[in-house]
Length: 289
Image 1: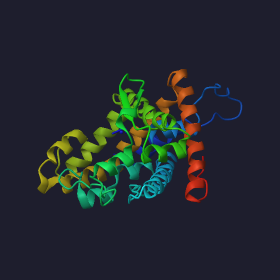
Image 2 (image 1 turned 45 degrees about the vertical axis):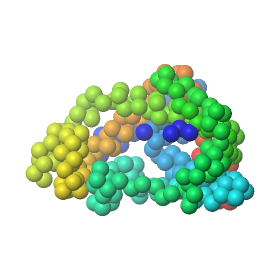
Image 3 (image 1 turned 120 degrees about the vertical axis):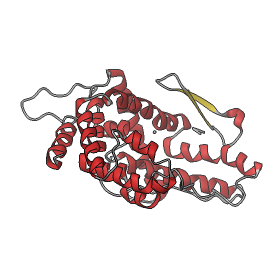
């Protein structure tokens, strides 16, 4: 078990950066054969259609897991976390959550219990199988993740992705490459400018923090957490801080080494095939892919 200023001017920066990942216009040189597909860009940046597609396949995995557990006489309660509303920028900032729970430092939301007998050894074995049969996958950063190859969780993943190794590759490799993209764009002038706009907005609210990390650190005091989290989110949206960072990552993805682009295209194709299989399991329309 794998046990993630001027409003119009700022928006223009985001739009221009995102458009850099689009197909070239007439008369321009066509993209190379290993150019990232839109689905692959979405996958490595966890944006666009990917978050909804991921929850869709997760719902199918959970449903197969439920059926498997029921066949073993166990009650399993599927759980798929809700997706925040709005476009990528608003989804990532998630102001409604900040207004109710701040950063979730003092009031974290724990997923519900997977079953009434979840702590029983027999339940855990039915769910995760024989631990001695767990598999390992070495990731691009040389880290290794382990995941079950037996049990109902493995059966759910295999039902959607054909086998558990395909699931693990789609689940883990894009995250590692995506973290590399975050590092690549962290020192960009565009992101620095957006951070300055964010800091100016925060000062106007009486919160003189230079960076979001400083605001989060100050929010360690429970009484101020919601106030700081909401101000942070409002200023983020006003400065397009998250939107700028995402646009830069999407643009940087198109410049990844050819081997990474080919792998991400393959993983995106696998994810799309999984979404189609999930549609059959859930008896729902196939999501756009």
